[in-house]
Image 1 (cartoon, rainbow, N blue to C red):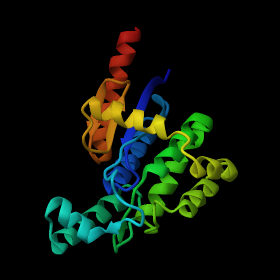
Image 2: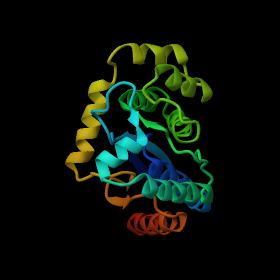
Image 3: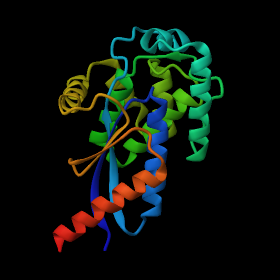
Amino acid sequence: MPVTLKIDLVSDVSCPWCAIGLSSLEQALSRLRGEVETQIHCQPFELNPDMPPGGQDITEHLTQKYGSTPEQQARIREAIRHRGAEVGFEFSPDGRGRIYNTFDAHRLLHWAGVEHAPEQLALKKALLKACHRDRRAMDDHAVLLDAVKEVGLDVRRAQAVLAGDEFALAVREQETYYTSHGIQAVPAVIINDRHLISGGQPTDVFEQALRQVAAEVAQHAA
């Protein structure tokens, strides 16, 4: 009988390692099909909550934030593209171009989690593709609504969410909850509210951790 696990993915759609981590996690879960049952719950984290409308050139941003050179960034970008290919996620070879505020994307993800829970993960993946493969502006409501339409969710309802401040407080509260519990970098995969896997880990690492937690749950139930 499969073991049921609760998985919370704390991440930001602007984070390339979050795309890698989610793809690796899904690969691990596919290996455990029949042994583990779960639904991934997407939780909010903003890498750049103060990013103004229109975003910032990514090279300029990374230089200011981390002190890296364009040459270093190019090497990291290529490493990320290679890691993505290994787990089936396609990155643009030219990188993101610009980095944007993602708060409205998180509001839509929260809406999907509340009103359309089974489709929340599909929306998350559509947003990640729009950001990292298609280099689209993640603070542009038209881009966000394209992702909503792509996964078959209610575009009019999503428009209403974006037009006001619905779910803003709920997203802020969730962000505060996770940062106050020690989450300072993403992706962070939390299993059964107790076990933390940090970073865009390889599939084997996720598989081993999930097997270990599942075995502990099964032993406790017995």
